[in-house]
Length: 144
Figure 1 (cartoon, helix red, strand yellow):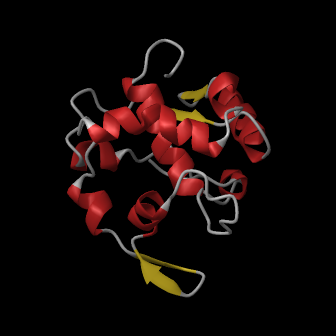
Figure 2: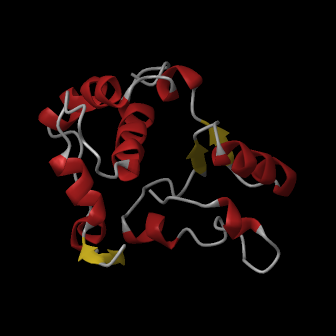
Figure 3: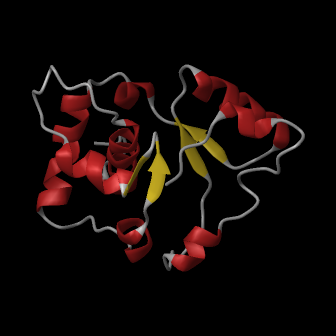
């Protein structure tokens, strides 16, 4: 899973879909099927660019994106509890510097999230990505 920014789509940058080496590194049996994008805010721009450029991209169902973060996390928690979801070594061992903090931001955001913590001011975009991936990959036809 990657977070994509609209500024990646100017003519100076190659397509973020050009290199799906992670699907090979992670042993994806069917390779990459493309990307799933939230159809709101900058995601709408990404989807339009993908359509124009004929890149493999799908909008995430609005029923799923309209859910609150707590509800979305709760809806996929059973898959995590049953250990149907695992981190790849690549995702677990990766560290990056973001806002002067070096850590595994993906694991940190997922494992520090608490349902019902309304006062939380922490970043949680990677938690959204995690929940969307589980709902789409393991959920039923409505992504649940």
